[in-house]
Length: 146
Image (tube, rainbow, N blue to C red; front, side):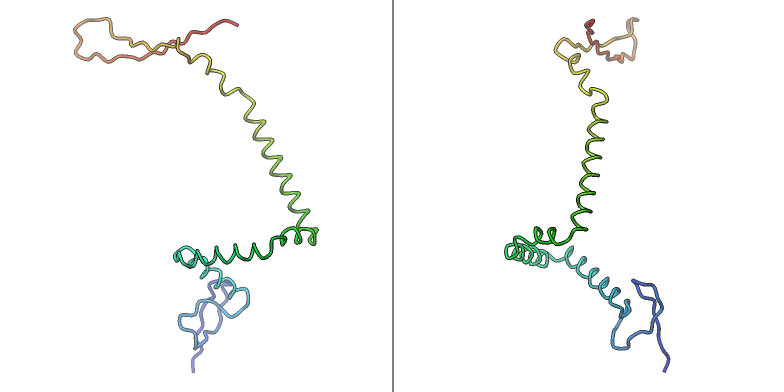
């Protein structure tokens, strides 16, 4: 009997096909089977509204039954706390930097000039009886000294 092989969609190894599994695309290793399951769940989540609703409701029920889970998890896992603290400091630093960059120039500096005294004028060619009379629109903005 000839051994039929295939390439695993996850780990890319060439492995022997299981004759009991039709259209086998994943090998039997734990990580590849987990990848297969994750892919199925992702697709199901996107396509099936009932699945989405059931998942959301079961997660909310679990959260109601375990309200202190994350507080306890953080208190037990020092590495998690430290990593979270470092990441938050980096986010804060980036936010401060972005705010500082935004304040380099005053963005509303011209708002005072665009007020009710600003007028728009249309300039026409001075020669009369032209066939084409396109106007050039010009906005005149009064600038006060100081």
